[in-house]
Image (tube, rainbow, N blue to C red; front, top):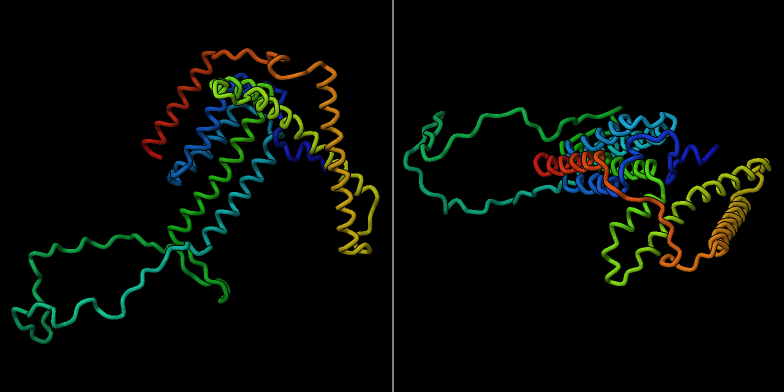
Length: 317
């Protein structure tokens, strides 16, 4: 088991360098916000289009198959399971109860102008418009019993709800993963600091916040590495869990969790010591220009595509 390969969360793909890597981080943040905001209150067709667009961007960027195959596969499986469970579950549409008695009495009805003979239908009222012809629309699409025990009912609302939830889960998770995969933590920090720079006038410590974000992104692989080492250390000891029982097994995992916390605190202390040794006093005095943020022609082309995305959301979403 290799968590650093099976769970590429927050990891940066250093090689190969694709065209998505060369985009300005501020432009990629704008696209990320587009993927996160446009599905809100959108129809299922638009949300399904977002899923197809994310897969198309991954293929167009020529990201190696080994990097995204497992994570995209798990997300597609998760979205499919959520769709199936939501579709077969009750749609939650409240029933419209009908009154047991009519709202008006027979004495309030107007008298008939002519007597209707037995076997004779009443003459149509010319003031009343005729009903439209019947269509093939059905609210309940599938209503059957499986093995005489389980009733399977699929309605239009349940399918619509399943499509919304499954596509939203895939879009939120995979768009963020794709952004972290093609953007280094230093670029994220530089882009956020440039975007949030007007807030310095309000006394908000933007540099400190972005520095904390950079350290947290750098700390994610260390956490995965510590978890992986501890799990391997438990497996190599060949513990017989059946003889331990539930109580002693829980004590073993509590000790492992305690050791994990101590190792993480030790790593954090080592990082803090390394920063102090390099003479770091404050972000304002010890500034390191990581990236020179300048918009290139490809960035303007990406912004034009983002404008088309928001325009399509207003027209068809």
